[in-house]
Image 1 (cartoon, one colour):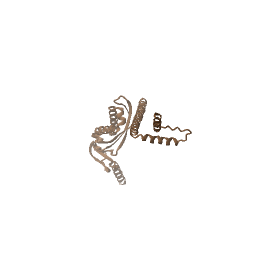
Image 2 (cartoon, helix red, strand yellow):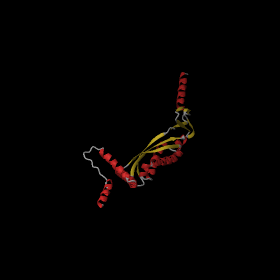
Image 3 (spheres, helix red, strand yellow):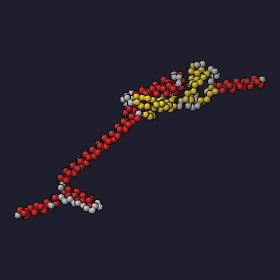
Length: 253
């Protein structure tokens, strides 16, 4: 009698161990009964029929997947290496288990081929300058392709673009030439503005000759403030013109 009770207790414990499953808050269990899907359960305590039922757990959290560097030839025939990172999550556990054998591997392979395809359709300058546009195109294509698997791709970001050494040197020369061009343009604009101001000043002096004398006195003040041993004072001929006229009148008399 004691052996019978002990055996019954052991069987009950084994049955409960095989039947009871506990799923975390972020997990869902797809239940197969005799090979057919009956429902998705979780989270919490799950009871299964041993031998008859089988459960496949699916993580419903956001998954971060790194896309390894891909060799890409851009539309302008530049060979580069591009890698990216994608963020996605399972929205429908049934589809993620039934529609695809391994949704993680399938998503990774799809992301790699899509990255090569999209980057190969644009030029290098567009990849470098318009990453947001490239990211949006990648996200749209991946989200549309993984939708039948019950997966939602929320974000795709291009992380790094590895350029050949020859292209890096060429871009450095281009950037240096662009900076020199801007410096020359800025210098020319400064000379043009200075010439305009000088022309305006000449017009004012032509209308008001006394302004030239005031400018002359101001220049003398500036020269006198320097600690020089010798100071030259240029004297305009206009100052002596009244005296010259007076001398000329006396000689004519």
